[in-house]
Image 1 (cartoon, rainbow, N blue to C red):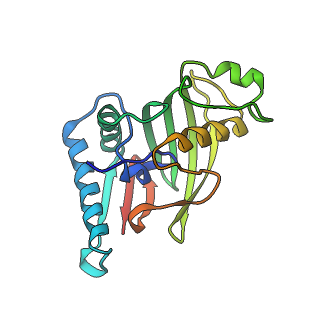
Image 2 (cartoon, one colour):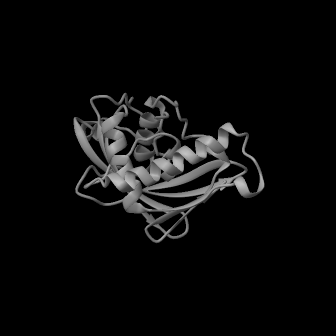
Image 3 (cartoon, rainbow, N blue to C red):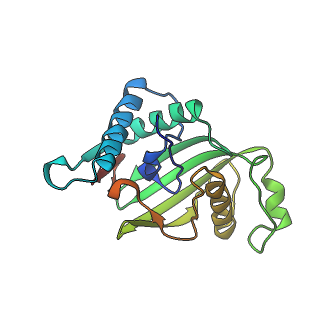
Length: 198
C-alpha cells in the first residue's frame, strides 16, 4: 500500500495517502476508495496519458470516512487519532479530528496564547470548515472554526494547529503555501460527495 496523505488539508488530496477515520468502517467502501487510489497511482506511473486513459470518480462521504478509519488503523499518522469528513456543495468540507496534543509541538504566539495552549492537552476534538480551491494544480483553502463539544479555537489559533499537524506528517505539508495536488487531479465537493478527474 502506498503512503497516504493528511488533510488536511482536504478530502481526497489526502487520497494519495491512506489516513482518515470514521465511525463504522465499511470494508467494501474502503476497497472502493483503494481501487480509485490504485488506478490513480497506475495513471501516474504511466505518465498521465491523455484521452481515454483519464480517470474520473465519485466517492460518497461514507466511503471516504470508512477508508480514513481503516487507513489510520493500518498506518497511524502523527498526532491524528481520527478524522471524519462531511462534504457540502461549493468545495466545502467540515472536518472533525481527534488530535493527540501530546505529539503536537506548538509554540506560544499571538494566536496561541498561554490560555489557548492550556486547552490543547491530551486527546482533543477539533472541528473546522474548509473551503478549498484548486488552481494550476495547487490547492489553497480557508478555514473557519466550527462550534462543537470539543476545543473551541479562534481562527488564527486553528490555522496554527493545522499547520503544526500537517508539518508533522511524512509529507511535511506546508499549509501556509499552495499545496500541490497529486495526480493532476481536479476535485469538487457536492452534497455528501467528492468528485474528481485527472
